[in-house]
Amino acid sequence: MQINRLSLENFRNYAAAAAEFSPEVNLISGENAQGKTNLLEAVYYLSCARSFRARADRELIRFGETGAVLRADFFSGGREQTAEIILHGGRKKIMVNSVRQKTASALSGRFCCVLFSPDDLELVRGGAALRRRFMDLAICQLRPRYAVSLAKFNKYCEHKLRILRDWRDKPTLLDVLDDFNHNLAHVGAELIYYRAAWCRRLADEAETLHRDISGTGEALNIGYKTVKTVENPEKMRPEEIFEALMEHQGSHRQAELEAGALLSGAMKDDIEININSAPARGFASQGQARTAALSLKLAEREIIRSVIDEYPVLLLDDVLSELDERRQDFVLNRISGGQVMISCCDARQAAAKTGGAVFKIEHGTIKKEK
Image 1 (cartoon, rainbow, N blue to C red):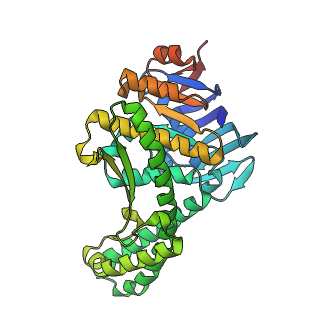
Image 2 (tube, one colour; image 1 turned 45 degrees about the vertical axis):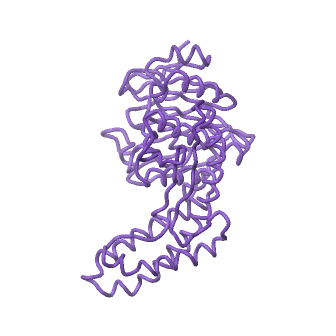
């Protein structure tokens, strides 16, 4: 899987730009605030119609403009394909191979990316929401059904939260609370079913990678955490998970009404990360956190390869500077076999080690260096 050509119009600081990339290593160089991360963001956005930085699509449109266009010609599934996303008026139009798509789930499995950025170091020591987002973005790229279920789940959560906050002023809202609990349990069961299976594969890959990266004999252990009534999600069918979620919601109904907050369901899920049996979130050093985060991202890449039988495009956004030389060498030695884009201020050292193509980014322009 590789992106052959990318073109941008009014995306972030790019008024109009295009570039053709190497199927192997591409080094995106330039000074700060020139558009290096914006370029990687555009590639990532074309894989799932979601930004890893912006909360709203309007933030992606160049200042002073009303719309933006992103287009990629890529090779995937043994053939040449295209993806185009048009942003305008708060809406987005998604085209795959010149056919308009109803939802972003149509991109799943077609053009996959794995991103590793400095912010991902917080995957280990940050809050559970970061790890849920990590799971969701990864699984959405592989499972169209998961992406659809996640969108439904988020809508049900919004509606239920309004009920829990407003029921005292509008008691009739309680008449539909049980319906939303049923819907949340039904869709949540699908999410948990997929998350549990994905986390099992993540653990297998990441724990092996961690041993290789750390070189210290430290043991990384990863587990999936959901509500207590779902005792063994890896071995439960969705209908069994549904019943367990309904039980948990029933026992927390009064507490949710009193708190005016969601206290039960898949919105509380987390990935438990332990190093040498100690919770990494509270006890990991900076170096241990970096190694664990890197292991998670490289493991994600291996999972995608095993599912679709080709490597996703790997995007490394200014992370080499966050790693010591030994970890840098490990990463650069592990990225063979697929297309890679690495943003950095100075590409000379990485170019010497990888022989990659170098692109200079300056004021929203892309120029390939000879």
